[in-house]
Length: 254
Ligand SMILES: [Zn+2]
Image 1 (cartoon, rainbow, N blue to C red):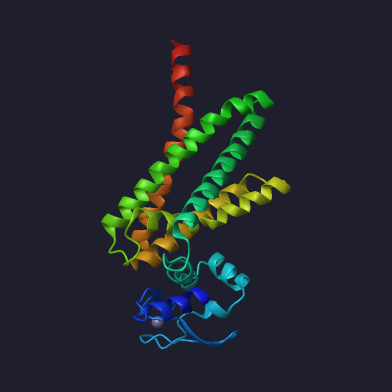
Image 2 (tube, helix red, strand yellow):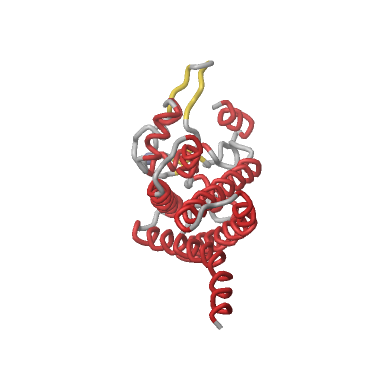
C-alpha cells in the first residue's frame, strides 16, 4: 500500500499504471491514505464501481476468486499487484521461473514413477538415470510452450499496454499457472494420477483466463492459443522422451 502512495507523492504526475479490476480502465490511483490504517478506496471513472476492492480484502478472498477464475482477481494481480512500479519485477520473474520449472520437473517425475511402477518395479538407479532426461524434456517442452504463447499473444491479439514484452507475458503465464503449487500436496499424501490431470486442466484454464485479461479478446481466441500452446508442450516433452526409445526399438527390430 505504501509503495503506491509513495509513488503518487514522489511522482506528482501520478501516471495511470493501475487498472480498475471491474472493467480494466486505467486509473491514476487506487486509494487515498489519510493516516495509518485509514484509507479511502477510489471509484472507477468509467464503471463507477470501487476500482480495486482486493486492497482491503484478506488474501484468502483473492485466492478463492483466482480459483474461481474471476477476471477481476487476475486484473488485480497483473495490473495492480505485480506492475513493474510496485514490485521487484526481475526478482519476481526469476523466482516464478524457478518455482514453475521445479514443479514441472516434479510433475514429470511423478508421471514417470507411475509409468515405471505399472511396467516394471522401479529402482533408485533407474530413476536417477531418467532424471537428466526428465529435466531436458521439461525445459524443451516449456520453451516450445512459451514461444507459442509469446508469439501467439503478440501476433493474434491487441495486447494491453504494459504486457507486450516477453518478460511481461512470461510472468503472466507463470503466475497464472499457480495451480501447480497443489502438486506439493502429492509429496505428503498419496493421490491417484487423475489428480495431476485435474491440476493440469486448472492450469490450462487459468492461463486462458489470464490471456483474456491481458488481451481483452474473445474467449474462443484465447482458448485456441492456450490449447495449441499446451498441446505442443505435451508433444514436445513426451516426444523428447519417447523418440530415442522408438529409435532404439526400430534398430532392435532390424
Ligand atoms: Zn471500472
